[in-house]
Each structure stands twice: as structure tokens, then as C-alpha cells.
Amino acid sequence: MVLGIFLFSCTTKTPEPEKTTGNFENALSGEEISRARITPEILWKFGRVSDHQLSPDGKTVIYGVTRYDVATNLKMTDIFSVPSVGGNATKLTGGNYSCSNQRFIPGTELIAYLSSESGSAQIWMINYDGSNKKKISEIPDGINGFEFAPDGKHLFYLSDVKI
Image (cartoon, rainbow, N blue to C red; front, side, top):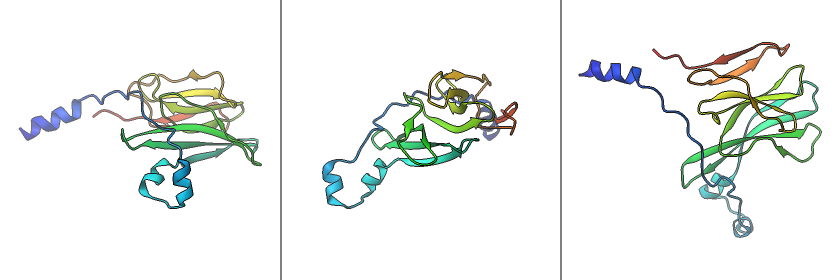
């Protein structure tokens, strides 16, 4: 019986990622700000910054901001850019799909990132301003991470291998 359970668990297909729906724009209220006291509930409203990358020309920084919806126990990560000398941040991605692993593509004006928008995590590409979104990979069962070679002409990716 134990052998049967083990074999079944090794051959079961991982469920496809679903569209993320929740309230991820949970800003602090005026009352929460005026109390000047941090509670666990307020901490959940803060965005978590991750995976910052400096552009090859040194002029732009891209990074992820993850926000959580406590009611649904879900998270959503969007990609932002900001001039490296300071200024206003620009949200490059949005919608109901979390994004991650953002990378500048060397020798181009393009950013690549992972998104499950097509059903499994694949590499997508956008311009520095967030326009012209395009899926550039179709790896069965999805991708866990990737990096570009310094010349931008090659990349490697990480993907789970079924036993």
C-alpha cells in the first residue's frame, strides 16, 4: 500500500497555476497612519521589495513589489522601474498574474520576466516602459527561473523534472 501511494505521488501532475484574485491595493487608512503604531495587520499592508536589477547602462533599476491579501491568503508581485538617480517609480506589469525574476536583456531595451499568464510560468518580454508584452518561451510544465548570458544572445532556465 505504501509503495502504491509513493508511485501515485510521483506521477501526479502538478495543478496549473490559477489567476490570482484578491485585494492587493490595501493601502493604509488615515486612522492607521494617525495612530502611529505598527500592528501585524498593518505590516501585511506593506509591499515587500525584491530582486532589484540595475540596467546595463546604469540608468534604471527594476524591482518586484509583492503585496498580500490576508483574506484570501494570496500574494501578487508586480514589476516596477525607477531612474537610478531617483524619481517616480513606474509600474511595468499589472493584472491578475504575479510576475517575478525580472531581468534586463543585455544589448537591448527589453526586460524579461516570469509570469503564469499563459497557464504555466513562462518567460515574457516587455520594453523598458512596460509596452509590447510578448511571451517568448513555451516550456512544458513551466520555468522556475532564468538568466541571460552577458552578450544577451543565450539564456539558461531552470525547470522541474518529473521522476
